[in-house]
Image 1 (cartoon, helix red, strand yellow):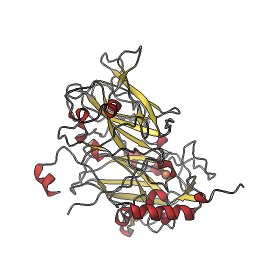
Image 2 (cartoon, rainbow over the protein chains, first blue to last red; image 1 turned 45 degrees about the vertical axis):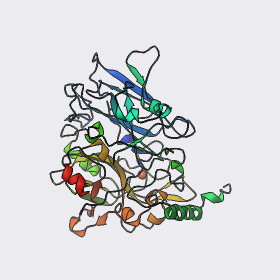
Image 3 (tube, rainbow over the protein chains, first blue to last red; image 1 turned 30 degrees about the horizontal axis):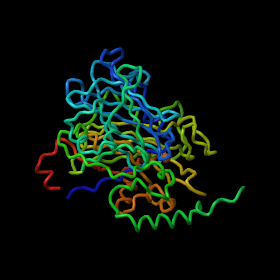
Image 4 (cartoon, rainbow over the protein chains, first blue to last red; image 1 turned 120 degrees about the vertical axis):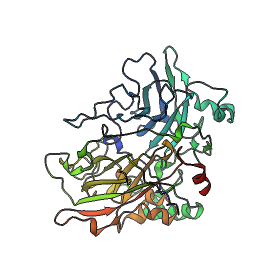
Length: 186
Length: 254
Ligand SMILES: [Fe+3]
């Protein structure tokens, strides 16, 4: 008999000294020429910023490999402090808390083989985290995008930041006007 | 003190919990919209989730963690400062399994919690209970080959919060877990057996099924207690969600 799953609970408001880590948003090695910025805000049903959310990203390496690599939270052997990724391995994992205006930012490399970065959102008030995808391009061949009506589809596609290069804007609206499409994996 | 609106009384919350439970279909996870938990009102989507059945979905794989991410000290929350923290020293251990009952090996488990007085080492925690200079309340470990995790810590205290008048969170430890797929990600909370606050807490009660709620409560295990040292609690965790490595046979058996 299969065991019954452990129920989800909210991350609560006090994860700040536990989950975010130094360099959590620096998925791309420093100064990498292909690095892109994925950034946006998490907004609630009133359009107000959510300052106590945490956003995680997961994606294939540029070569399409999906195994990830350890070392996202690489530690200093002497002090135990998180010293950040060494940049040789692409770990594929990002984790950042939103700041006081609900903003989050991840610097990463383009995912290989797919047009999207996987996103999970956790927050106080959110009893079960939410999955979505930040599409870097509006790929006509993508089955998920193709199945959505245009207005909803648009919530999954990042917008280029005016006047900035390789900056993709992805706001996450938890509820209401322009509510982001959230996903489940049955 | 000014009079508080009647909808913020515990009795009003209790009534809402009973109503929500009667209306909810049960299930393993809480509904994202659970009115007695006031914080959920503006933070749950109103559109149904879109199912993704693509066997090539990237979410069916997940990040990897290893010995570079975790130090040996991380699993003992009582040793992160020069002195001993105040409170009742406990060991919390258990196995992490996937939905097929297979051990989840080598994956990251993170915990965070209040100190023995019910105070978080967080500037936004305004509970007038003492901070403990010898306790931060954060730990990490990797599961072993049997899927086992283990933490040494102190039993956290209950703490007030502002959901309603006289709202108190039962003692709990926050857990964050990774499986082999992003779809198996779990953030949850572990409670302590016999805590009198359990029936009053809208967060625990958001899990509307009694059996599912019971799975969030650890078991006191006398065999795990260490003489003259610590009390032992056992709590097994089962990650929901599919992984890419399941064979078709297993999918069918489900
Ligand atoms: Fe808490």
